[in-house]
Image (cartoon, rainbow over all chains, first blue to last red; front, side):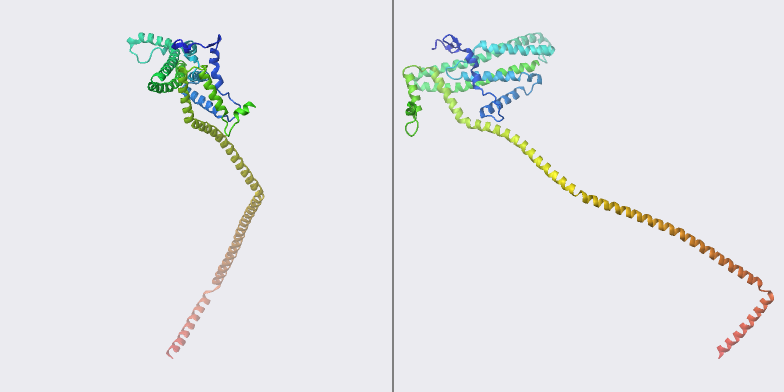
Amino acid sequence: MMVNSFSQFESPVFLTIPLIQLALILPWAFYPSPSPRWLSNRTLTLQNWFIGRFAKQLLASSTPKVHLWATLLVSLMLYIISLNLLGMLPYTFTPTTQLSMNMGLAVPLWLATVLVGFRNQPTLSLAHLLPEGTPTLLVPVLIIIETISLLIRRFALGVRLTANLTAGHLLIQLIATATLAFMSIMPANATLTSILLLLLTLLEIAVAMIQAYVFVLLLSLYLQENS
Amino acid sequence: MLSRVVFVSGMRSRGPYMLGTGLILYMLSKEIYVINHETIAALTIGAIAVYGIKKFGPDVAAFADKLNEEKVAQFQEVKDHAMSSLVQAIENEKKEQWRVDGRSMLFDAKRNNVAMMLETNYRERLHMVTNEVKRRLDYQIALQNLHRRMELEHMVNWVEKSVISSISPQQEKESIAKCITDLKALAKTTQAKATA
């Protein structure tokens, strides 16, 4: 029952049992587990190929120290992409629309990259605060700006994911409501809005995958910068 | 039994379709399922999903099969390579065995060679020895000849000397006058033969 447009983003509760844990665990049910066979079925082959390809592409131009993070980054990417894509189905709840969840993912990981950088090479990490080739007059201003941008990164990571997905879901809901409303009054308009809804859904599927990739890519970039 | 009646009737089993249609209509008419904006969204997503699977499904399946086939082909290649190298090893071993069989012939030939070399060497040395001995004997012969010739010459010289010394001057004059008269008589007879 739609009280307001944002009611679809409420944490689901069924008879006072919170279902958020179920929503968070759900992607696990859809991934095939590795089999001891040497030649596996198509699903598992494709999964292995995808994971290998993604990991190679993400970590190709990085040092072996960054490769230690491969498991974390790849599993994070798979988790977010599956949460996003499952959220495209009707009547489902997308946990990544919750700012709390995304900040819970972004802040600790960003903090880890910063701390790793400061622990291993403090001078180099601090040197990143001043880009090369800046005029002398701008140096103090630029340091402040770079520090603020460093501190903003965690919010940017979390809010980017939240905002993209929330906006997408909201738009789909609104346009679907419009289509439904137009169906009984002006079917021609309903056709137009349904075409728009089709295109928007395609876009949303793309955004769901891209946002997951961008999240993980940025984390890997911060890591490469700091390691 | 009811399921058999419901599901297996007629040439084609229309039972499940009937059940599905009936359920949907029941839920819609009794408003157990209410049509709302999510229905439209569901229809859209459903259309996209069906279209995507129908269009890209076979390609994705073929790609997955290709990945598996490449994996199998890689290992098959390794296995084939191992087998061919083993077959090659067997052939090499057979060749070595054949070589070993021919080893006795090789030894005979070598033995013959060595014997021939020894024989040649022996004959050369024998020849050399013969030559040396002959040279020495020739020298002795030459030496003896020289001795004999020198003795002969010496003897002839001595005889000549004694003969010449034994001829007295009177005898020499007489022999010379005799020679002159003989020559004159000879000249007369020759002259007379010439004019006659």
